Image 1: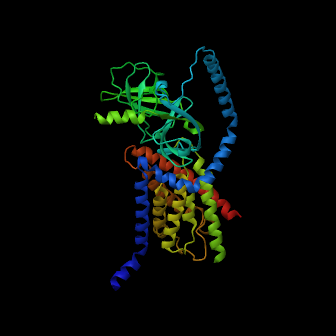
Image 2: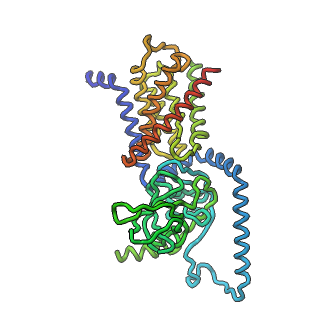
Image 3: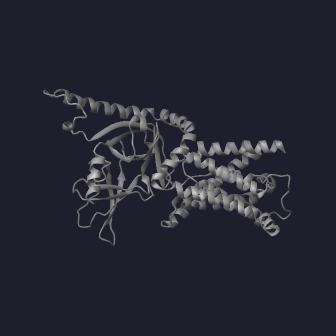
Length: 273
Length: 168
């Protein structure tokens, strides 16, 4: 007993160190999983007040840019509205009618916390479950891919950013239709990498890359970026560098897209696999 | 005694606010992320018992983690820095040892001593932090490059702050 006490006294610092380090590492490995961003979400509740205030300042500073983008969007929409109202026999069909075949719902949200300088980036939206947001909804900025929602609380959501080394997205070349998987390699926040495109396909710089509907998260044809560089590697596939359309350092107003038929599609696919 | 405790609490709060409100928002190409809050561990008085240093570093890391949404990363890296502090202090101790009354500051032990001391601790902290962030060994040299670049910036800011801290 005495020896034990002496031992504890002699090495008490190392014991305290190992104990605390154990707690920290346990927390780290537990919080690191893709879907455990819920833990992060829980903690964020505590620091949210300050974050919101900081974000208000940031939003204020970039009002000019937002104004101009809103103005251009307005004119675009007015143009479209004009085309629609001229149609003669517009029937009124309620949206929940299966004949109407609406598949995607759209809503807008504001980004209140964001980063682009880490290896695993997430961003927070100011809408949550009570505004109809759910996990696995797609997030776009303008018409371009931004991320996917991974956790919702009552009034906030956390989305995994495309700039996350765990993020995978099925993408295809618009001109030829060949698809591969898009990842971010953690280097530059303006560029991502498209893999699994076989080498016999003709490619050129500037080709547009868009989403496929395979994941049942993104609608088909949401734009991702353009080919900025491609290399033939030793294997059968190209290594294609994509310049992203979305500038993640000024992500502020985003659209959230929900797929109303996602459960139906996944249910059928699971049944047969 | 009470006076200096209050002073250190004020410094700690100021450094954490500085880190969270200013330095966490520096997004410069993903290579430069200064983590100036590590200065808290540097300037604790030399009489602070080692276990207290450990607990302070753990709590500091915890708070930074809460603000940057990175569970456990800063806590474990800062803890490692706090653990290595007594070892580093012994390694580079001045010839006459440390005076129990004085702070571990540039003014008390000179620029050269403080630079070496800060550099060792900062590099230990950043190495742990960036490798925990990436959590894999691919792109090893790119991570090393990020560590060195960020350490350089952190060190620069720490020296700047230290200069003004004693300039009062």
